[in-house]
Each structure stands twice: as structure tokens, then as C-alpha cells.
Image: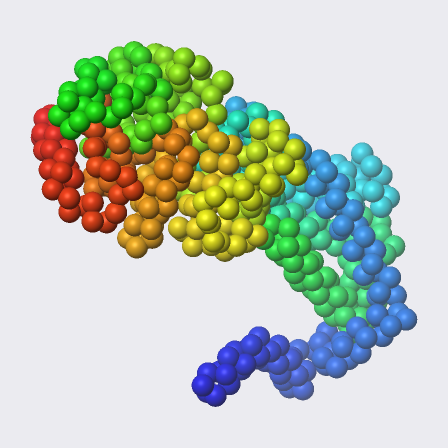
Length: 257
Length: 271
Ligand SMILES: Nc1ncnc2c1ncn2[C@@H]1O[C@H](COP(=O)(O)OP(=O)(O)O)[C@@H](O)[C@H]1O
Ligand SMILES: [Mg+2]
């Protein structure tokens, strides 16, 4: 029994092995001078830059700018893509007629569209949000439509045989049935939005945001700051995924059951 | 073959069944799936207030029959009436084989049952009272505040049956409702269903692939032939209710089951 408890608790700590392993390799790389120390500062230097950046430094501000843009982009994408996805998914013919276009643009790297969006929306904040929305919207659209199309036939029949109108079947059954897939879409959408926002912040005449911070630190050869911004971006991506998973779990408690 | 004619012949054979009147009349029913004729000019009378089991070879069209009658799939040709009324004018209940995919997992069990009343525009307060009354009457002892996926298969199917019954349907259809349950649960659920039938007197139509179950529960066993399905036989089951596991060894029961099995095997061998 004791052994089992010990094994179980040590299993929970397993992820830390990778973390410490990475830090160890980093230190070895630093001390052995395999990598130029200017390019690879010691981990504690990066950690200190991260700490300073978040307590009084500019990193916190840039972090929030990226968070706001990512959420704004996901919100815009959701508002447009969820209703559209429902329409697409509820008609096989409409879906088939736009499937190729959606799939094509979904496969197009959003970064290839930066110049186009710059021409249309200028170099302001909106451009970054819209280009990220575009990428996220296609992902969400696809998932919502898929969720609607794959609503369990039996549940629809069950509602119909109880006397549900078409509208009620749509609202009470098909919409609910598509929710788990919609949340998958939102989770993938927010991840993609973050990627696009960070890239946009690097290249489209930016003055703030995590992408800008990484880029500027690199230009200034301030490596600890650059690693700090990279870690902040990583933590943001990881945190967003967990946040959306948690929302998903409480909203669609029945998913996968 | 005329359905009631065959009922009649068994009535004389097994004694009177206080003359049931037809509830569901099927006339000239035809249905073809991708060129395969399932029903061709099919006629049937299902008696009112009786339990009818449908039995026949695999894939002969048992599910299709009740789905056509319940309007889950459109007929190609023919007419189905419920005591002279159309489907739209009739309250029906339907219990699916796959309860996992028939209940709504986003609602609690209670809300699932209540939803059937919501669709019938019953005010919320009254709906709750009616669900509670049904629970009381059936003596259901499960926690209905749980979600379907938190329940056993038998409990879920019981919730499905309650959802179908709560609107007090004129006809209840059940398509192999217990075939996804383990044997112990199946035996328990059969007796639950028998009690509900005796309690409500609702016209019930059960599709079963288990001959023993079909005969055990039924007042009439509708035996279908292979495709295109015809009525092979439609005997009365004269055993008294409530039936008990001991009914299974009653000589009359055994004899009738044997007859049905013979008919079934004759129909399967025909090709
Ligand atoms: N929606 C459908 N499309 C095409 N063929 C179907 C469909 N539903 C049933 N069938 C076919 O019709 C026949 C009868 O089906 P069914 O009524 O489900 O049989 P069972 O008597 O086993 O319940 C089967 O051969 C089945 O393959
Ligand atoms: Mg079937």
C-alpha cells in the first residue's frame, strides 16, 4: 500500500524531471562554453530578467497587450465563425459548396496575408487583431460546422418523435450537440490567434506586445530579456490552453462521456 | 394476410381476448431502401391497449416497421392511422435501443423526462409535478438529479422509458430496449416494463430479437417473414398477467413459443 502511494506521488512529480533536465543541460551548455555566452546567458540570468520584467519592468505591460489582442481576436473570430459554422453545418449543400474555400484558407499561413491586411486596415492595432481573427475564425468555423453535422442522429430523432419543431431541434439538440466540438475549435483558435498576434507584433510596426519585446531584446542583444519574453509567451500559450480546457470542462461536462 | 383474421383464429384456439379493437391500422404500406423492397403493400392492425411484440429474422424490417409507424422515416406509399387519427394528432412515445445516444447528456435525468412535457407546452411547475407523480407511480428508486452518463445502462433506459411515458402517450414503441443491457438487468427491466404496461394500459409495440422475451411480455406476437416482410403469424398469448419467471416453464407458454419458433425457422429457411 505504502509503495503504491509512494509510486503515485512520485508519478505526479514526473513532469519536473524534464524541467530540471532542461535546466541542467542549459547550465552545462553555459559552463562548458559550447555556446557563445553572449547568446546563451545562464538560466538564473533569464529567470531574473523574467522576475524584474514582471515586477515593475515593461514585460508585464507587453504581456497584457498580447493577452488583450489575443482575446480580442478570438472574440471577433468566435462572434463571426460560430453562427456561420452553425449555418454551414446544418446544410450539407451549403457546406459542400464552401468546404474547399474554407479548407484552402485554413491551410494558408496567416502570415502570408499580413501585407494584404496592412493595405486594408493600415498599421494600427486593429490589423494585428483582424489578421489573427481571420486565422482563428477559419479553425472555429470548421469545428463548429463539423460539430453540427455530426450531431447524433438518434438524439435528433428522439426530440422529433417527442414533438419538437425544427427550430427546437436546432436550438435544444443540434446546438448542444455541437458544443464540445465548438470548444475544441475555440481552444485551437485561441492558440492560433496567439501565434499570429506574436508574429504580427514582431513585424507590423509595433511598439508593444510580447512579439515586439522578443524582437527588440534580440536587436539590442539583451539575451536574458529575450529569453524572459520567450518564456512569458510560452507561459501565456500554456495558460490559455489550460484556461480554455477548464472552461470547456465546466461548460460541456458531458463531453467524451 | 389480414392481421385480425389470424388473431381471430388464435382467439378460438386459446380462448377469448375480450375482443380487442384495432388501435393502429396500417394500410398498403410500401418502403424501399436503395432498391431493396422492405415492405410491399403491407397491412396490419395493432390492437388497442394490448402489448404487441414484433419478432422476425434479422434485417427483415422490424425496426423499419415501427419507425414508419412512428414517423421517424417517411413511407413511400400507404397510410397509418391511430384510431382514425393521423400521427400529428396522436401522442406517441418511443424508446430507442441505444439509450446512450437517445438521452440528452447535458440535462439531468429529471430534466430529460421533464423536457418531453416542455415540448408539449406544459408549464414548468405542472411539468415538475407530473414527473414526480410518474416517479411515484412507477416506484422508481433512482436519483434523477444525476446526469445520464453517471447512471448504469438499466437506469438510463428506465429514464428513457419515463421520458416516453410522462406525456401519457396513446402508443409506446420500444425498439430492442434491453438488448444493450446485461442479462440480470434485462430480466429486471422486463418486469419493470410489464408493471408499467399493467399500470397504464398503454398500447405498446416492442421489437425484440429474443423470442422468449417477445412472448413473455406480449398479448400478441407479430411474426414477420423475410424481406419483403409479410405477417407470418400473429398469435394471441393467453397467459395470465402478471407473468413471472415461472411463466417461462408453463406448458402453454412453452408450446406457444415452440410454435413461434417453428414459424420463424420455416420463414428463415424460405429464400
Ligand atoms: N436508412 C436505411 N438506409 C438503407 N437501408 C436501410 C436503412 N434502414 C434499414 N435498412 C435496411 O433495411 C433492412 C431492414 O432493416 P431493419 O428494419 O433495421 O431490420 P430489423 O428487422 O433487424 O430491425 C435491412 O436490410 C437494413 O439494412
Ligand atoms: Mg432493428
